[in-house]
Length: 514
Image (cartoon, rainbow, N blue to C red; front, side, top):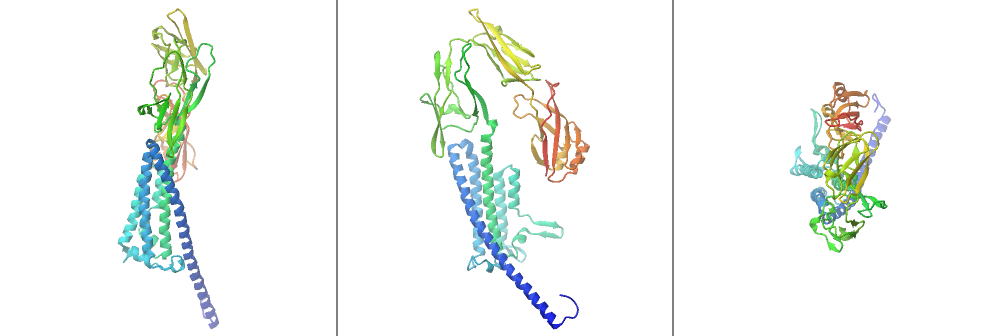
């Protein structure tokens, strides 16, 4: 209290004040112990619910692996590996809690679990770890490595798991080095130690949930990705006569090599298993006699242990006695691209290719023997016309119009990654900026000629070529962790044929500084 000479009455008041503060502190510490106990109860209840949910996911995944092994067998094996490791680690932690609380008379009387003796004796001896302490740390490390092995290359999830189960010592400077086990478990009340172990068990179940959802989410993303669909034209029939009305539907069809039917029945006969492949059924049979025909039947899939049947529709086709029009198709797509040499095949069934005359409404068309190269000019469409005389002297002629499209804008890329990527700024300073045309029908080589770089809080830097110049490297060196560096206005040119064509600017790429 205040210095100087105090009266007896003032000394008594000061003493009573100190006793009052001590009583408040003692009461507060008891409430804190109870709070840890209540937290432990909530963690226990939550762990039970999460464990039940994880088991349900595993059960469904095991069933999927039986029904569709090509798609789910590997995912199921990874999930089971993590589940076994999680259950073993969780069981070990349960044994540790039982050993620590074996002398506790009432496990619900948290205010009496205020002594650190049980935990200190279990984990430490004369300033060092006991065998139990070493095993405890080793078990955490082993589980972390097993989980990381299952996770693979998922950087975000790996970082989460490494943080949850980190046992690295805390090093502030050369004089301050704190052992992980001592920092988290030495000198703490027993209820705090038990609650901390319960939290590790919660981290185990959370890790299971994250990994299962990531495994299944990746498969689901692949399943619903539009790159796995083909746009297919389904005609009412496959042969038409002159001036007949054309009737058809354009539908999206799934192209999934891992999706195989249990069986397929066509026109009453079961298709051999060797013909059921790559998410489709391969039909190789005689077309039949002249007239209308139909392929009908059903696909049978197993789902949740029960057969699901899908009827086959749109299988009508016609067999005609002789060709009455030319067949013209673009080898790459139903379009031709400006600035490129588009390969085309032109033929008329039943007529030798050297007797067919082919011309284009615009652009430049070269070739012979049924194989041609079309280089479009200006305009949005080009018509290809093929004509020839048949053996009876009659002339057959047919024309087909193709859309003329520009080469799509490429995507900016760092290390062949597009969109938003993460890397240290030292790596970014050495990286080159490229451009890619994902899923484009032609294999083209593009060279980056220039780009702009923007670091938050700094002026935009213009760079010629594909690599960082000195100004760009200087700007990157001043970037902070977490900053998102924008690389935009990426310009490029074609290498080789079509080098004079003007490529559209590429989409930007964002780099988060790690």
